Length: 113
Length: 116
Image (cartoon, rainbow over all chains, first blue to last red; front, top):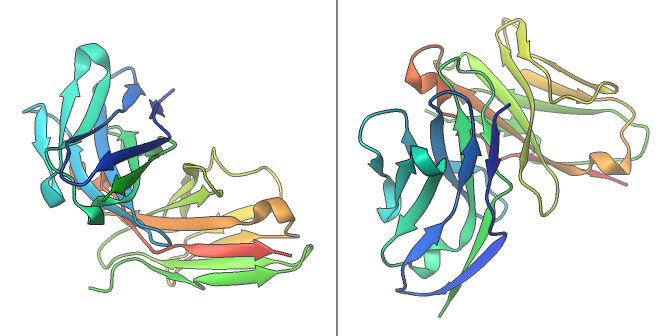
């Protein structure tokens, strides 16, 4: 069965510092991988997605993620965070059958001024 | 393009009452997903529907919960005889019919249910 693990519940980084949020997945075939962001009281917004091809994918708001098959990981990165990046970040996995998309438990990002 | 519309945004019910949550997908989207988010938790898949068909309801509780997506009108998530544990945010998402875009979910702003 598909599963997604986000090992960090809460991360605090200083504004301007670099960021890496971890995501590990379990899936038998080549997964479709996603990162979403949720601001308080809001729905989820897609940051980026990986289906195939180049393992480094670029997203909106300066985020990128790298698919590493050998490590079953899809970590999210940003070189320099802004205070407006404070939010909850969710990693998700799907497949080519376009059935249910499974989400991780999320990582809350706080920004230190 | 109004995006995914959910209503009501906030709903308060007393124990034993019924809750109905509605979701209108984005124009051109024919797949609808419902997720539940409990406080301080992630999103839990509930059900995946296409028009007039339930494709996957493996995340739905066996009792009191039902979902539909009729040929005309919005998708409805219905919770009968609500209990306090049903208090949560319920998110609807939609996606296109085919292709890789079928995996890309567009979310509504959610419906927050409070059971007194």
